Amino acid sequence: MKKLLRNALLINEGRSYTASVVIEGELIEAIYEGEHTYPEALECEVDEVVACEGLWLMPGVIDDQVHFREPGLTHKACIATESQAAVAGGVTSFMDMPNTNPPTTTLEAWEDKMRRGAETSWANYAFFFGGTNDNADELKHLDKHRLPGIKLFLGSSTGNMLVDDKQTLERIFSETDMIIATHCESEGIIRANKEHYKALVGKDHLDVSYHPLIRSAEACYRSSAEAVELATRLNSRLHILHVSTERELSLFRSDLPIEQKRITSEVCVHHLLFTDADYATLGNKIKWNPAVKTLADREALRAAVRNGLVDIVATDHAPHLWSEKLGDCLSAASGGPLVQHSLPIMLDLANQGIFTKELVVERMAHLPAILFGIQKRGFIRTGYFADLVLVDPKSPYIVTAENNLTYCGWSPLEGRTFAHSVHTTFVNGHVVYSNGQLTDERPPVYGLAFG
Image 1 (cartoon, rainbow, N blue to C red):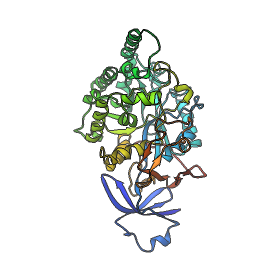
Image 2: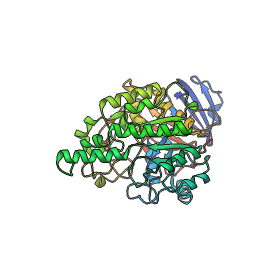
Image 3: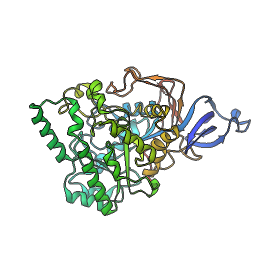
């Protein structure tokens, strides 16, 4: 089927300009820059003309860090439900983390997730392989063209996948040429902080406001610095996930193009949106690991997105049932659902002048594709897969329980109004979401190919 997306404001590769895009099957066949610059006969030759006047057209978001909870934790969410939420938010490709049940730490478990993705996902998919203290031999058998990299938990979070054996870390960092993506928080500092504040308060119950004090800036920096030291010494390819502090930014460089960086970083939208002042009103709804921290940290992270110290923006989408989020900072589950709203959040920040819409596209689509070597995605280019999102900049969107598609059924953003809304999402040339509704059929989707 051939479609003509007519006269959109195309936001791509640092520019915004009026253009029309032709989709043939799953691929982008042609791009015509300017208003009505395509051949006159084209509208008669295509099967469908999509009038895009007044809409923005951008490449679909590539989210490099989600937890879709399948297998084993499907009471929280699953690949089908969360990929539906993803495409409703303009996310057309995702990379899922290994802390499921069983964890994705064997080839058998990884192949099982790939099958589940092929059978149930509404977006293109990839799955990280989890490193442990005991599976270094397994890493030799991984196909680097079929998965994004190895995930290491250098601080414990949801699941029990802490890698703290120094010999194992040396071996993994020295033996693999794949991207090593890390969760960096110092377990020793976290334990000491926990005991300190429990003694200070005189009880085991601690309000959620203690969460960023326990999982402190020092805990993040110390672990990230150790990972950078390892990667630098052993010439590893390191990608530090969900950077949350100003101090960690001193570990990164902005003077190199991403293709030349051996050490890269990611920030998540909640660390760009919230501060520790928001615990008073939102409580456990914004309890993540690493914790949301100070206003100074947030402002430094925003600046780092602008200046290139931070390379990409993602979500760490991690749904829990609301019953699991109840309790104090020691007992409530950490994590929350954001994959449906990451693009509206970033465009809203652009609307406030914090970023530009061109930078949003670069950090959420272009650079994830380059960083991971994703083939034929992340850009609006002839011959690339038609993973596209149309945004209506004049249609405000209010987050409600009814339009929130994540299975867990709650959001820290409920009641918030965004200035922009996702109008239509295309995955591999197929409309999967339009005017507030998913389509009736799941589109053809693929495991991401890495170069």
